[in-house]
Length: 177
Ligand code: GDP
Ligand code: MG
Image (cartoon, helix red, strand yellow):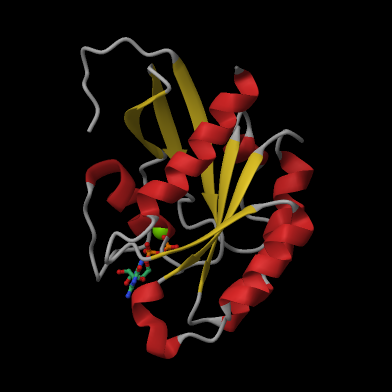
C-alpha cells in the first residue's frame, strides 16, 4: 500500500455512488486500508481516501470519494462529481431495490459528471450467495446496454475489490495516455 516517498504521476478522482447500505464504505475500506467492518456506521466526515498504485510503471494516486450519507435521491451535490474521472455504481445483490435504482444513479451521474467518465457497475455482497435476488445475467445485460464495466464483489471476503478498482484506474490511465 502507498509509499509516501514516491513521486506521483497521476491523481485520479473516483466517486462511489449507490443506495445506502450496499457496501460503498466497506468497499473503500477494503481497497484503501484492507479493512472490513460488519457494523459499519453511516459514513460521516471523511470525504475521500487515497491509495497509490503502479500502472504501467507510473504511480497513480487513486482519490476515492465516498458519499457522506447523501444517498437520498438527488442529495449528492455536483461538487461530489466535479473532476471525477471514474465512478463505481454499487448495488447489493441481495436487495432488488438497490439494483432497480441503478438507472436513476446513472442518470444523476451523466447529468453531473464529465461525459468521458469511466463507470463500473458493482454488485456487492457475493458472500451472501444464498440470499441473492439479482441474477448476474440481469446486471451484465444492463451494463452491456449502457456501456459500463461490470463486476461482482464481496468487500467482506475481499473478492474482486482490487480487480474492480484496477479495471477502472487502468481504463482511465489508457484514456489519458
Ligand atoms: P454504504 O452505506 O453503502 O456505505 O454501506 P456500508 O459499507 O456501510 O455497509 C453496509 C452494511 O453492509 C454494513 O453492515 C457492512 O458491514 C455490510 N457489508 C458491506 N459489504 C459487505 C459484503 O461484501 N458482504 C456482507 N456480507 N456485508 C457487507
Ligand atoms: Mg457509507
